[in-house]
Image (tube, rainbow, N blue to C red):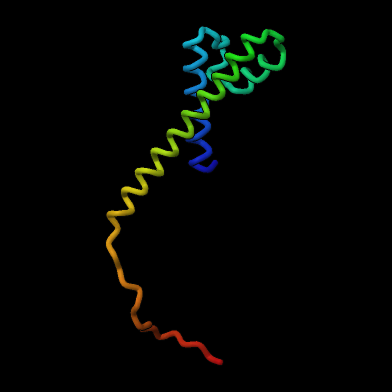
Length: 99
């Protein structure tokens, strides 16, 4: 699994579960499983419960977005530490092209 998918998925699950626990809605035994929450969303007709589930999903996506914006900002700052190297040099190699 790609590291970005793994980290993003884990962040989403944990942040969403935290929101559900804060709202007192974390189903027992789900351990933050989005599939269990999705099943709960499709089986209920309670508008307030559905609204809280959507809010938890949005909260989870905001967590993932915040994580990746932070990582991107850190990468930008680290890019300023890269030394400038001139690539305008002649090639010195034993390999030649035959035409």
